[in-house]
Image (cartoon, rainbow, N blue to C red; front, side, top):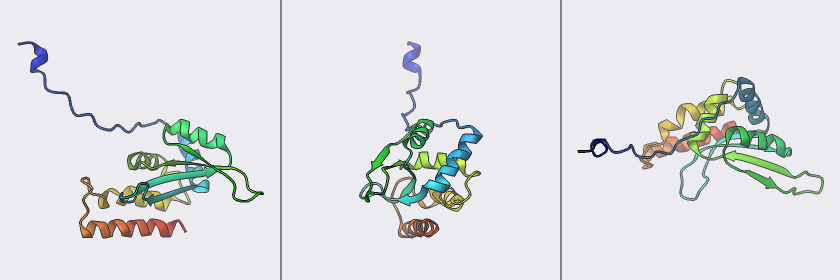
Length: 156
């Protein structure tokens, strides 16, 4: 028999989270942006989903957010039109995929100051209250809701 017929089947294709290499200076700068202009939270991005980690940075300087997007290679930048005549156009960048958020938080956590509590709470607790199969027991759901409320209280 040919060797190709005896070889094991290829492994299943898994979603790969691209890991981007940031210098220590870039990690610190990104942490500063998130501390000053960002939000670290758990929220629902699609109807019917459970809350998941999300990162947002809002800014009136599109170039800053383009830099973030280029460095992290993910998600989009949304234009926000001013609500009042004396306000500027602003932009919002976000990551709403749990794996990417967890990766970014793990990379910048040592540089965060103001939002370090939110980052550490998500890094330490999110997977503990999120079943891999997506099926929540009543106890697990209550723990997830408690985590969401803790994060919300830190973001006030």
